[in-house]
Amino acid sequence: MKKLLFLLAIYCTLQANAQPYSISFSGTDLLSVKVENLQSGLIVNLNAGDILLLSTPTGIPEVKNLKSSGLKIYPNPMTDKSTLEILPPVAGDATISVCDMTGKVLTQFKGYVENYKQEFSLSGIKNGLYIINVQGNGYQFSEKLLSNRRSSGKAIIARVSNNIQTVAEKKSIQDSKGVKATVDMAYNAGQRLKYTAVSGNNKTVMTDIPTEDKTVTFTFTECKDGDNIYYPIVVIGTQTWMAENLKTTKFKDGTTSIPNVTGDAEWAALSTPSYCWSNNEIANKDTYGALYNWYTVNTGNLCPTGWHVPTDGEWTIMENYLIANGYNYDGTTTGNQYAKALASTTLWISSTTTGAVGNTDYPAKRNSTGFTALPGGYRLTTGQFPGVGYYGRWWSATEDTPLAWTRYLYQNYNYVHRYSYNKKYGYSVRCMKD
Image 1 (cartoon, rainbow, N blue to C red):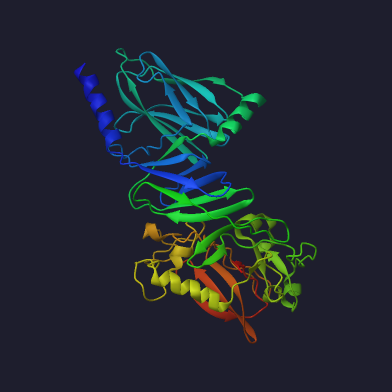
Image 2 (tube, rainbow, N blue to C red; image 1 turned 60 degrees about the vertical axis):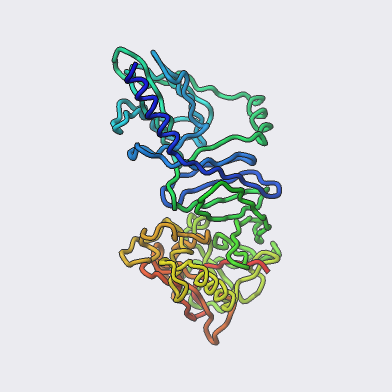
């Protein structure tokens, strides 16, 4: 009895020390919010009206304590056996683990799970406090389980059922979307979260380091290109930018196609608008967007209606804002050291240079703007494709006769480089709201 009370005391202490922050979300016709911890990589998805509860796990460093409605355990405490009810956000391979308080894995189930409710039976767990952990593709759930089983046995996890939902059940869940639910996420003080909010076809990106209970309010702006592709947007200072690279194959009127030029000699001979995919592989479209020569930029018709390719001066306005507001990797407010604040936390080749884009140091500064710049490389005037993983390069709309001004990030730099280049180069484009 004393041992059971001691374990219950541990359980209550862990809960009391969690120091949760409650984050609510609002915005016109808000549908959902994807929350990504840029340091730990954890991702949770919330429906409109859901509340994000950030809790700091203590005493169990081996386990990321991400509790969620995606995992339910009953009965808890258990005597003979318990049922694990799992609702994964995506289908795919998953691992269910039972760990003791030292982090030792007692038993596991590994297999394919669908993204609907499924049940597993857990038995053979002797007296004690345990962590049940479910890890799949881009998600992780954890819950505590208290067992007062006296006799020991072999710990076993067995699939009980796949509770395939009927059409009526799915409709009922959809209809209850507005009902508030709490979604827990493991969080350590000082970590930066990236929010991607959805309203219809529109998306808005924000980043935040929560320090208290709050409501995050999103403003949505349409950004739709000539191919009817919608882009997420991010506000930086007084400017509104695309949060992804442009990938349109048509001008903004939606009827005029931009020539796709793949041959090296043909690309080298161009003095008219054209585009290509990095390494001429359309698989790079969704990740890196397209590469355009400056003749395409100079038409003034490349970006969505109400948007434009930023001028050299508008790039400088962003630079001055980021420097003045502490986005330099070291928090200083002079000098250009803000590249890390613009760069994605993934796909860059690693670097050991302090504060560099490819270095994981200063984690709170990584992609702190939500701009999410990716290393899509570029195309030379001779048609070759260097730099994927190393460089991200973007055109401005400003000519520097006979060249044009650009900005670029390099994995080994902690600053953003400004330089003018030959108009035949193929670079990425980010559009800015008029």
